[in-house]
Image (cartoon, rainbow, N blue to C red):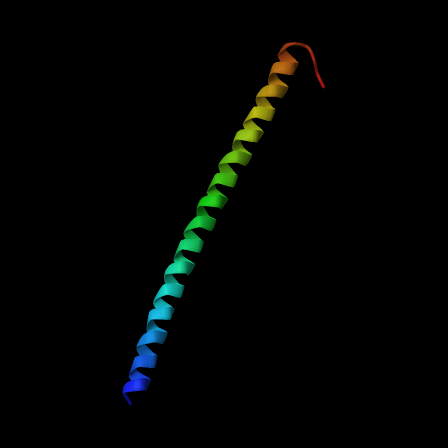
Length: 61
C-alpha cells in the first residue's frame, strides 16, 4: 500500500510540473502572438506612411 501511495505522489508531482510547463508555454505563446500583432501593426503603419510620403512628394508607386 505504501508503494501505491508513493507512486501516486510521484504522479501528482509530475502532473503539477506538466501543468506549470503548459502554463509557461501558454504564456510564451500569448506573448509571441501579441508581439507579432504589434509588429504587423507597425509594419502596416510604416507602409501607410511611406505611401503618404510618396504621394506628397509626387512619387506615386
